[in-house]
Image (tube, rainbow, N blue to C red; front, side):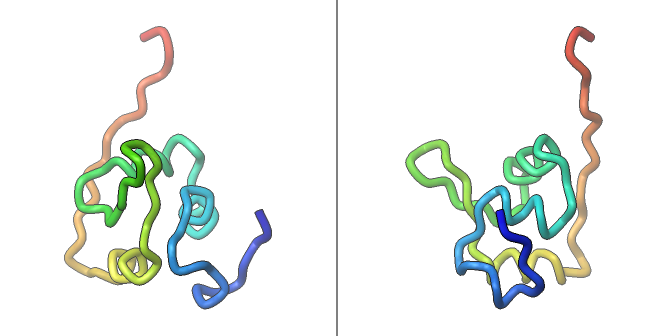
Length: 77
């Protein structure tokens, strides 16, 4: 995916790869965020998750947002 320099360059509906790029997260952390409560995700077709860019920007700038940290368990534990 081509790296974009500001929010205006992104499409109105963001895919997981866009969220990953903007936040600098790993793939696993990105999908965990997309599934988390309070994150502005829209589910399409029962499985595909996307984010409306304006709602994502609002979520990013919300000073009252609380992010619940969840430990990532390794395989075989």
